[in-house]
Image (cartoon, rainbow, N blue to C red; front, side, top):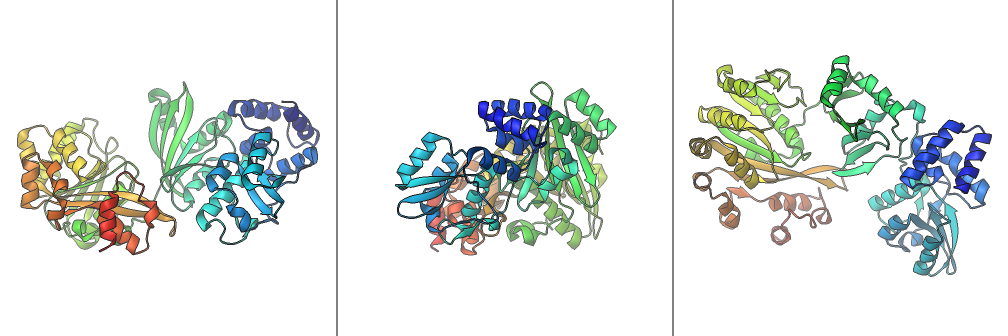
Length: 515
């Protein structure tokens, strides 16, 4: 604490921070178990460069210069990446006797001595921020270790470019513009986080204080939404910022009153079925009549795929499309078809069983229910399909088998289950895999065509038999390993990205890759 107070005194004396912010930074750093300098950066009170300059003057230890220094190729492989990440330390250069090593905490004697033993050299410590260490390791993860010298100026920085006072809703929501970002999480008392390539990643921005959160809420919430949040402790709404985009926001209370925001940027341009890699197995059924099940785990692209299917029909067929969405993520414009989008709860009555009981009277050629959740929704989907309507129904399920079993178990009667077995056209399920090469998500899919043989299995409640007979069902059942093997051969993803996933059969994948 004495060192923190000494550094704090210097900061106050230089006029870089006032006493109120210093006290706040000291309290939060103690709570979060971080050094004062790191906490000042995270809070956005002073810049990374300012913190490192002060630490160099106070301690006499060199500080890492991201604009001028280079990490030598041989130094990059002196420690395994996981040890560098664990110790928050990176070798920069070395000869036979001594190595320069960047440390987030060069005064941690245990870490310094451990590195001396591991690299069998004396160490010259260099002060670095946690953000510098994390950014360098993230860069090396992408380009590879020990391949070439790394000028640190080439490292993409995550360090904040804004002061805490500059943070507003627009600035924070702009994090969703980063390529591969699919979600944003903002919680009081910590820094914003994004979901990148399916992984939760903390951003190096100022901590969101109650004052900052209040400022964000005033910008994004209407009076009505704010009242709903106060009364129901949560609200789902949309925020539109001219020149930036349209956002879906889920705002809720936690820990007795602290606010958390989950945000997603809604894409204005609807992707084509070709750009998503949707297979002919599913697109060839769009001029048929019956039930098409589309499923994925949460956040794995189900809604985007359904939007692409609707868009394909809209551009190629003349028909009346009616959707029930919760909420509306993509806006469709009338082209060859009419696309009438109804958001559940906003464009419909609250009495949903009554709403869905009247669906057939709306005269749809295509009925879309993006998220089947209740028995009356599933009964409606089956009745509509049985009456000669193309029904595209979305579900949260891990694979085609669990989607069919989940659907059947939710139907109201054996009679409805019998209709379902006759009405189903196909079940399609997908997963998204992060491609390190192309820096985007790539879809892997599994499909089941409802041929008479498959329909009989479903009618007899023997869905689980199908996967066991997969080798004899070519052209009817398409295992997910087939699409993965195709993506690997086309260099869209690499083998290492999927081989350790629990939902991949490594033996089946190996056979398919050897074909």
